[in-house]
Amino acid sequence: MKDKRLTSEELTQAYLGRIHRLNPRLHAVVTVNPDALDLARKSDERRRTGEVRGPLEGIPVLIKDNIDTADRQPTTAGSTALLHSKPTQDAFLVKKLRDAGAVVLGKANMSEWANFRSPRQTAGWSATGGQTRNPYVLDRSPCGSSSGSAVAAAAALAAVTIGSETDGSIVCPASVTSTVGVKPTLGVVSRSGMIPITGSHDTAGPIARNTTDAALALWAVHGSDAADTATSDADTALPSDYREVLDPNALRGKRIGVWRKGHTGIDPDVDRAFDMAVQRLRELGATVVEGADVADSQAMMRKDMLPAVLTEFKHDLNAYLAATPGPHPKNLTELIAFNKRNSAVEMPKFGQELFEMADKTDGDVNAPAYRRHRSAATRQARQAIDGVLADHRLDAIVTPTNIPAPTVEALDPTPFESSTRNSAVAGYPHITVPAGYARDTLPLGVSFLGTRYSDANLLSYAYAFERATPVRKAPTYLPTLPGRS
Image (cartoon, rainbow, N blue to C red; front, side, top):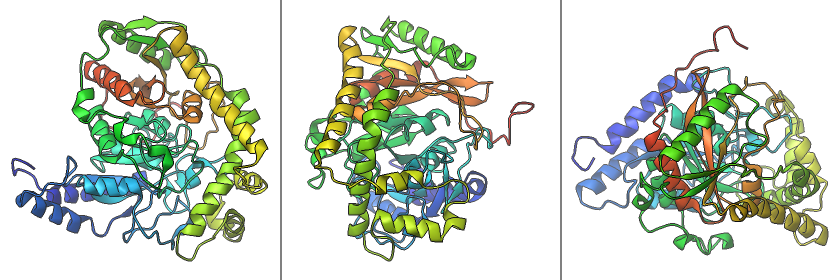
């Protein structure tokens, strides 16, 4: 664009063409912004007159459909209940994108209500967008809930996409689509204008085909927001220039812990890819420390995390619905009733058990019982990570992100422990990078985990690993794996 060899209008039109050709198979995009080409033309005019706003000037970006845009697109969280909601302003991160020059290309599909309606939810399915398909093998799960964002990034339906995570919703879909997913420290990116599950976990972050693009997008959207007290330190949480993390020697001299327990010995392709990743870390000058296993989070989840999140969900969702104009349910109780009345559309595949459990709570985030649960969950999650980092004097922890994608409808029984839960509950950063393929086809990711505000360091390690391990290949859109279930 700077060399006048490409315009934003041409680039935006090219992405719109790819969406037109590929989205009928992928269902990754719910809505295309009817103003996208006009926004691109205005960007081109700014560039011609020397008024470039920022590093994303003219770059088309897709945004997950639980992030408010005050334009001609709805923000639905995948539910027909919100098709007519009318947010009065952009989410803070969308405003940051526009300030950086980005063209809001459209909204990405997602697991309805961010995978928090039923424990038997189908990842990547929503009533408004249908079933998102994994672009590598179409009958394989795209994971969730930022499934559309990850698939759109993998299939080059936008330059970069924005997802959101409560527990694994960025890094899991990124890992199964051979993309880079960045779940930032809680408070680096504002939560204002996002349809919530819980303010104690929720954060938005970028998904891209490489670490450089993901870093650039993170720098564009991060920042302090007066409406979100968690972001008070966001302006100084990252270096001033994203290029500081693009260091191919970033791993030299660093101590990287290896988390194997609960993740290896389950799938031979995962083991092979992870062993190769660990060897690559050694070759890049890192001191690799085995035995850096993070404690299993299952007991914490059952005893403290789930009761806290159910209360927070009712409180936070009720506040969002009540504050958002438009003809739609104004609280969780009304939303449950809406789903029952429209069950053929909203509940053809699974129910709303989590909604009903949350609605039975008092939604009181000042109640002593709730505060005990939240305090215990957060404390245990932070100790699980910080304890390992301190005991082994580590700069970061590395682990397989997930197993190969199962089939779309599978409720996977594989005993792979969550690689995301402690980071999610602690509010700590988690980044996944492509690491290889199972059966030469299904993407596998490797994760870098750290403590609070270690985002820039983790990105630099991810960049160094990615640059030395260029394994990513474009999706093949296979209908199924030949001869395999």
